[in-house]
Image (cartoon, rainbow, N blue to C red; front, side, top):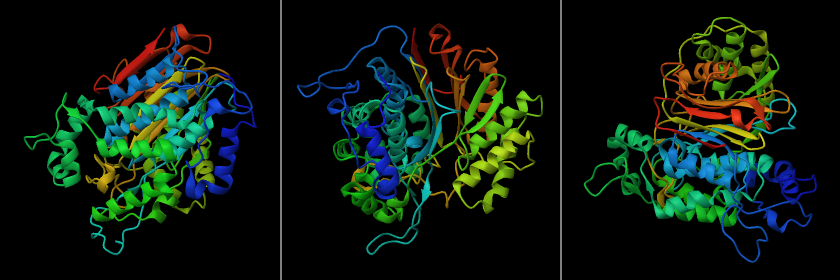
Length: 498
């Protein structure tokens, strides 16, 4: 597929959103690329009809690589690549699918951060931050007391913005797999079953959660059980037809807020409107001819990874380097006046080559990560979170959405991901979870794969869990060298084709 020209309607839509509508209605503009009046190449990933001159395309040969903590989501992304979608298309579909298959860590009520890169990008690509945002803690008239403050949902908005910049099809196309899985039912994976077992008592205390995640015998669903989510199906259908903006400004927003208020989450429509994702520069580290981009603050785990990677490649101390850097950074960063200043300060810390002294951070197993690379060398690496397993453990009324936990209530999550390139070619992508250990894990794994080791060959830290893709000969042009790997201790899946 060719690069969209500057006058492409999706780019014009993006400029409008960012300049005038982003703060209140990101996602409300929807353009179907197969009706593109300027005649750029376009296709649809799913479905067919007389109004779609190009139906789904199935590629042969190398289509790319996908790694994810949850197998069904990995297969969805692989299918998108096989149908001709690019890395951003597949990543958006994967992220939205995780809201169905792994809502313990990636519900529509949660948030996250992504890196995206493609050949031709200057520098290390772009970072998209859609972290959990604290909402109001005062109940509206008729609302329940706010005993479990919820985060404003940012997942859909963040993935939309990333896809707006890097995707090749209408965003609504990427929702089809998640919608079909919610409607038809999924087989509970080992990853979801493990999370359900860990919090079954508190989770089943909420009637909404119990209606979704319990079996007929009153116990939580186990691995292999079928999970059908009809209410979530309706939400996904609404987003596909009305646009992401409906979850922040429309009927879906009002339904979500009403459900949150009734469940003691305390969110308002104003909270949802204000939860706007941010696009910014990654932090960068040079290692020979390779540039590695990391998620910047306030996704602090990326800062820790960058510092740890710098230390590893300079021959300095690496043990707990990332954790120490993040702990110290959080103590120093309170005076920053803007997001740009946060990133600038963090880049200065990385460039200094020093490892700040800092304390330890609490372990918070509430995140998940994935990475996608397409056959052209485009790459997306994301880390998603609920800031607690199943967030606040309650569902927002009739939406079927599990609400994320407010960062006011629990320690903010550490989200880390990295993409390496050598100018015009993709070399590697690594993502991590495990909160306090994720930063060091991503740094150590990135050093290993750039040094020629197979992705996921061995655990790199005690608690950090990685997903990695490596193309030692580079992409495009070195498809035969590409391989993916997940942490051997996880229940994830790596898929690819050559």
